[in-house]
Image 1 (cartoon, rainbow, N blue to C red):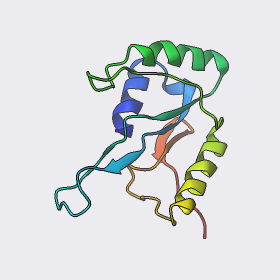
Image 2: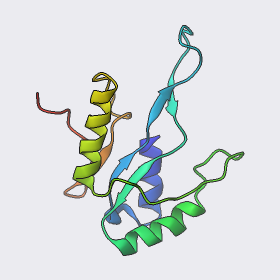
Image 3: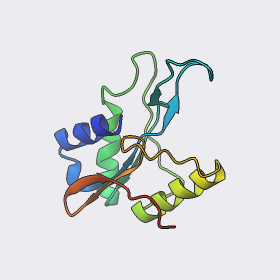
Image 4: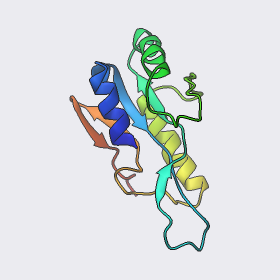
Amino acid sequence: DVCSLIAFLDEQGMGGEVDYVYVPLGLSGRPKDPERVYESCGFAFINCTTAAAARRAVKVLGTAPLARPERELSVLPARVQGTSENVREFYRRAEERGGDACYNHTALPWCRRHGVWQPIPAPEV
């Protein structure tokens, strides 16, 4: 989940070099299953504050015990770059899904502002 990834980045000394973390969640099980829960889709987005930090993140995340044991962890550059751009993209995609942005704080992207991690605010209407 997003909190585990943030904790891992902080433990690796990358907390000050990353300012955006998003771990997309999806519902497990079949649609009518009352036991469905939100779980990671198996990938994440982070934004590094510098190119050097991004190179370091590739090394740190490449050996991270974050992936399921049966799956290989890949670290790739994202199409969308920058914290503000990633936040806009999150809400644009939510609107495409019919405004279905999940406002549970662990399902939202998190940003580091003034040294403190917090979920992004809901869009102003």
